[in-house]
Amino acid sequence: MTKDPLPTALNLPMVDPLPEATAKYFAICEDKLGMVPNVLRAYAFDIAKLNAFTAMYNDLMLAESGLSKLEREMIAVVVSSINRCWYCQVAHGAAVRALSGDAKLGEAMVMNYRAAPLSPRQRAMLDFAAKLTETPARMDEPDRAALRAAGFSDRDIWDIGAVAGFYNMTNRLASATDMQPNDAYHGQAR
Image (tube, rainbow, N blue to C red; front, side, top):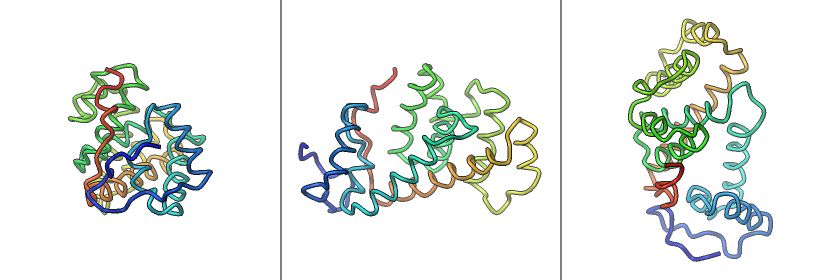
């Protein structure tokens, strides 16, 4: 593995050598993505923290859900846009572009999801995620009822809240550490 600059402003270098399982995981990332995302490199100073982060990410973003992968990435972008998280706007904006096949949608999501051409279902989901990010203490039954009316199950509502909550946490950590997005994200799916 190359000795790239640290992915954050903190002096927390990756464990060297990486444990075999971590090295394999990073090799899979390199093979599938053409890079190891800097968020993973950032966590690699503590393998237990890296494993906890990747387990939560994989569960929320890749496991079985009533939400599509694109919908989960859209939530990540909306939350990250509200929080102005540079790393996540870039990385997840690229994912929205790739999954949707629509570069303009990815850009609109980063700038202002309300300007994007969304289905009523997507709009309800993203309005919920935005409110949960901006004013979580004001969430109430009419917010959940709006999601049910848009076709979401109670399990889907849990997943929307979990994805939004996860990105609110990761946005804050990325901002606290000045985490930088991989250069490759900027040109993807354009």
